[in-house]
Image (cartoon, rainbow, N blue to C red; front, side, top):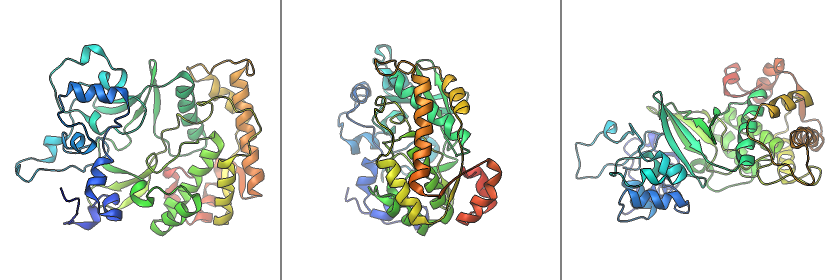
Length: 365
């Protein structure tokens, strides 16, 4: 494989390929993380002779649950999209938990070979709908579910989360690739600077740029240290390639208390970076002011138990106070550019960012 791309319809080309033209790098980016223990078990169970990233994705034609991209060998002219789409997944338990009872079964096509990310997880089909089921420590699952419920309260466009026994699950927000999800790396590369990312997105679409600003506020509020170019992105029209919106927000299991309880008042990198971004934008962001009562109600609704420590004996009350501190710190740093209002100010936000009123469904208050 030379790695070169000669597009037939350039507008429908994956954004990563539009930006780089590197087909091999794009294919390798779609492979399951080889450092995951269950990834190694999965490749063994599937009898993969070559276990490198490129060979791994080609074993399933590079197909994924969340988009319509795939590759066809030149010698197989009869292969069609419906032949490579996943209809079942018999290796979900092996991918999620290393289940011994699903190790010794005949190989079959599975979406796990293109299920990216560093945590043990699997795709599971429930009543005709794909759900991503993810493992984690109780504090990680607690943080992910609480982040989802806080985001919903703020009116953000969130990927749907629910409990799944000792795990957490998230519904496929592309509805089995009725739209294409593409991670932001296809647009911004490995860039992490908020202002530079905002300007890149603004050149693409002003409404998506405004949605990005709100995502950064949310990350600052929930102390999400792990936002990167592969865990947010955009949705595209599968037929035309048109970019429709920022994708629903997901992957918050390294936020809040996932890595322990903070031991000092918040004035950290995430808050300072958001302040730099909003001052660069120069327009206020209108957000709902969260109250202690609202936060306690949300926190008490989470079934996973946050840990008790020698320092934190009442973790749910501690988390509510800490979120209120972060909310106040964001407002203080942003010097009037974070304005606390109720959802009735939706039209003001749309006007400030030049977003049509249809943006309500895209997470704007």
